[in-house]
Length: 286
Image 1 (cartoon, one colour):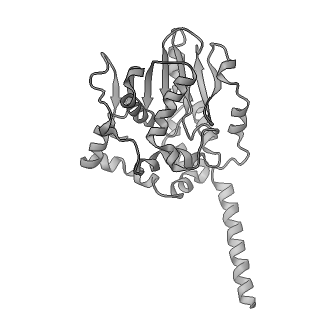
Image 2 (image 1 turned 30 degrees about the vertical axis):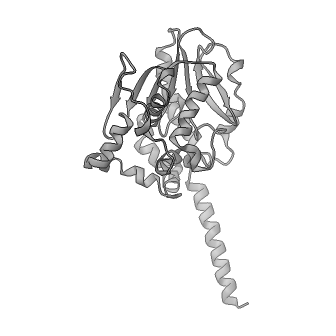
Image 3 (image 1 turned 135 degrees about the vertical axis):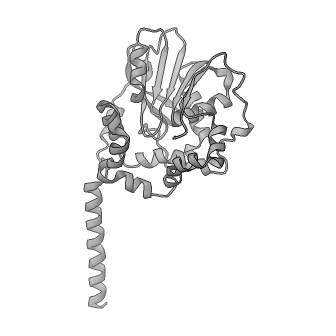
């Protein structure tokens, strides 16, 4: 082999090495998985008392990290669903406000956010799978009917949960996201909504969103989103999303939207007649 061939080979090797060093120093990856290590130390929900606690809830082969309060009490249950790119700590103010009420309150880190509920396949992040998690959590905790509250993506999953099995929902509160059919109609016909939702197309690209969002140790998320949030919350979000595969898992919610067998909203029951009262707060800029 010629000297030129070895020179090209050496150049490629050095380029790959320098690229690896650059990515390691400037992206978000926590190869030690510190967050996962902390989650592994958490007790199962059956081992905790009624105080506000962090625990794990296992459904089949998935184990979810959760914040719970008064879990063994006799009051009605409330399940809280967080949005992107957050976790159950987003509901901490709700826990604080309800600490003197006799409700069972459950907020879990959803699929992709919990380290041991983070499948690789995009097909595992369809709305149907995420809805199944909601009812799976309730079943595991022996909760037949419950109040449901969702924000952002959590609201989207909440709408689908209500449409899937409304008989199990005592009340439904959606924050930031309107009825899914209304949102999809706006995406189809409203230019302003189309403009505000362009990020969804970006998130559907392979690997590029992870690379860009991961640069500067999640600098874009810290500057555009997390800077408006409490420091303790931001620290938790960063610890979750900094682990290898976590950011991809959360973006897979968006990527699963275009799958052929995604949730069919049009063929599920309506919510119009289900509730005497419910509160919905939303904005078109979601």
